[in-house]
Length: 225
Image 1: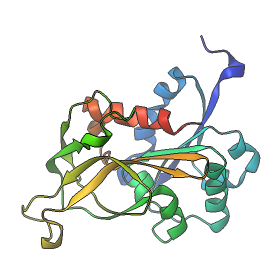
Image 2: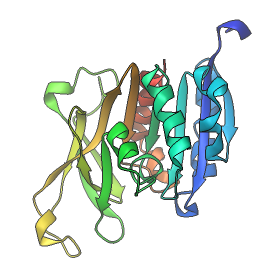
Image 3: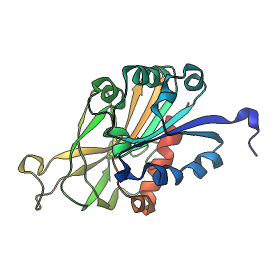
Image 4: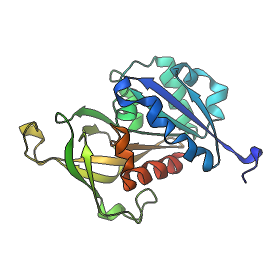
């Protein structure tokens, strides 16, 4: 059993648009974090990012906060902690469609949601062959079939893309997106901190697909200090 003194600390920050079920989605992973040796704190307010003492003692932030607004002080607190070594992890809109008006936040996470075809799209997520040894995706199938929203994202420099998906030519897919290959899973370094992003996770049963669940769990562990 992990002793109390050796526990790492995870901060789960959840809120924003309710359509992504931030409470229910994060609740699925809280037991995993505890079993993995984390003391878990949950916050439904972004103000926790301004608490320098809490942030400095946090080894991993799991954020599920779609859209919404973040103040400069809140973003500075989060970004400063990550630069100092606190990990940041999240999925879908909870991390890459958060705080659309804050470009510095987007720079830190390495990418930003732009659009998705209407409804759910059955598509294939492909592990990048050259990155198949990365601990987040090692040993997983090369091709993962999902039926969910397919995110088109704009990404920044320096991200390490671990998995991608390619847009088809079906109804509802804009001509400009057809045939485009976009990152689905990536990591990013921000100072001394690690950032993990997966664009899968619009609905709870997305995590019933075992490779998706495994990628999410491994991504959190990889990002943690």
